[in-house]
Length: 388
Image (cartoon, rainbow, N blue to C red; front, side, top):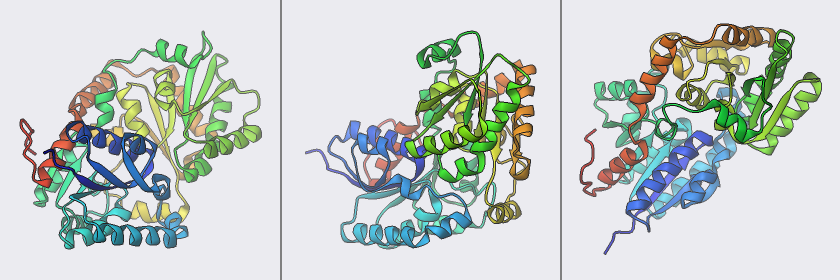
């Protein structure tokens, strides 16, 4: 008789939802009756997860912003702890959201429930002291990037580098013209994709300046068209309000979703720092990355930062590949000038070669490797599994 698995899982934001959905799908291919429940986004729910809370509940960025939602977050975590302690799953998996998940994981691990964490906190960049807390909270870490796994091995924390599902999903070459046809974008124009983020706080800090950058750039080139994918109706409404104030007469297309297609169609991309920068790298598209937080949050983060860059492309390359613009430097003109450089001086063969090397390094069938590690942690033998 096939074993029925029950797995607790908590993911926050769109990136965690994508990872969770891929993992759930890979496990259910082998164990179709496997049960998943916890905090899930729409992709995870579609893959078969029961959502006790929606993933958007955890989509809060920064120290100051978390404080505003702290009571609700603590209540949700307390309920999940009680729920999983009363009906222990075979395994609990926390996907990203470390400030929420690690405390929950520690309680569950202490109660004898096996615990894994998928997506390493940025201990390589800041707050390295968290490694001790992570070691107490999890039985096994799954990392997306190779340099993360090396750090965990140095600290004797069981780890598996699985690669990144986006690297598996995105072909090594993507046709720009096909993407433009799919989106119905005007022919004969150069396309700039604007992605001001998937959180309301990101839109609040970046949306208006992204539009100002488009306006500034349009005064330098008349052959430009802008495309803006928006993840939900709330962010679309916010962006449309900024557009009414700042974006008079722009040649622009707003999309409900379709961020992948929008970036694939672009000659250049302006985007908020985050997972989307990795997708832009995998698509081999030149980009400018913007980052802005509440002033107090930024001052705290800057004091703790241990690396010279904050964007994924630069950290993966170990060098400055893309322009990073932060805080008070995020203005329409500064963003526009950085984009203008990309249009006037296209990325060379060397930069594209680095993008391709990173893509191949991360292309490891991540969801299947993660599923192997999960099943092995539960105690199920997996034939042909790659060793950590």
